[in-house]
Image: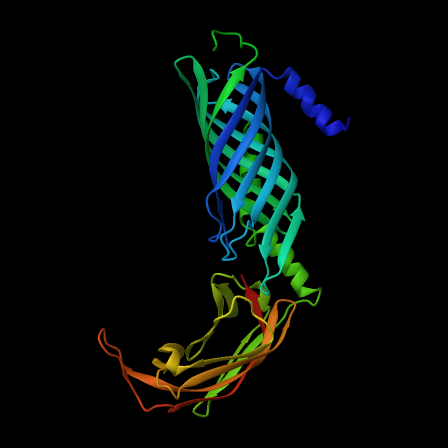
Length: 181
Length: 182
């Protein structure tokens, strides 16, 4: 088994909680007006390092469709793997939090048509930076995470920048040193 | 924690300063073919008065706001901001290729040139504007054009009033290394 997936599997195994999220996302920046609102999905594992903070590892997929007039499935797909530090502002592991993340885009592809009408597939990877904020809350006894984040993937001297809004349901496998979920 | 936050925020701010998306940056490298900065030019005479425009490093222009370029937008819009005003030409084609393109006044009123505040149109059936794209390589087009247009004398919500048919002659039109954005 390759080292990368093995490390991911180990971390997921020792993780104390995991999220699965769906959300909407919008590409921002120069020359992105033809991108429609996209979709984002990810799974995230977290390991508590204190009462109010977790180290997180996340793998996801971001999908953007390109409305370039060709009526085809042109667009961009990226699969970032990022590590982060989620810090709840009140130090309890609940409520508002901030979460900077850094990682690597495992795969990125943009399909489009050039000026001559020929289809082009551009493959890239890149470094990923993200800054997110959210709110951890319970609906009855089900824990949820409502979050907003700005993410950028940098490669080949350019960057794909996007803003995502999502809600996730997460499952805890262990308890902090206090009354938890 | 603070160091991590500050580092992340600075990294994001710096990366957000990159003016191109990854696909645009990759295509720009492919299109330039290692040829370095390209100078785009546009020149023509309007009733004998020369209009010239030169744009160094033309491929580095903002695709959303450029001085001389061509954008895919349904068809393709060739547009220039000269010292005397705007120059524009619409290629009504899904695919821009080397070839001859013409627009006649009989197709409907079409704006082409703003010359020192006077708008020149194809309005009368005898008005026309013709473009020859003689080269399309590495994302750059070159060619020539000519035409005869009519001045818009008075704009109105009901009926525009135009001047003498074909009284605006466009001659010696030439464009070189104009970048095509999409």
